Image 1 (spheres, rainbow, N blue to C red):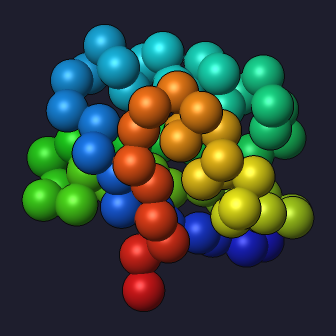
Image 2: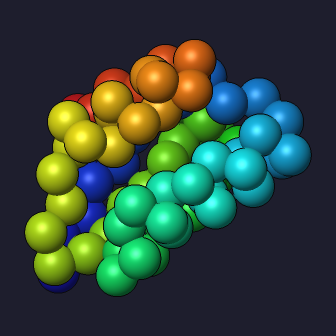
Amino acid sequence: MIVEVFKTNVQQKKEAQMLLQLLAQHFPAHKINFDLSDCDRVLRVEGEQVVPHRIIALLNANHYQCIVLE
């Protein structure tokens, strides 16, 4: 299992829920969640094959910043 963690600029729970639905459509086999209480507004994605650039592109296309957290 691969886990990737991303820093985002998602602020509201409503935004996170919308993005979780969108991500679930594109990556149905992945476990995905946000931690908006973290200062980095963390997006965590777990799955067999996590492709960071696809996740980043999807959030960017919806006007959100998203970078891999080192």
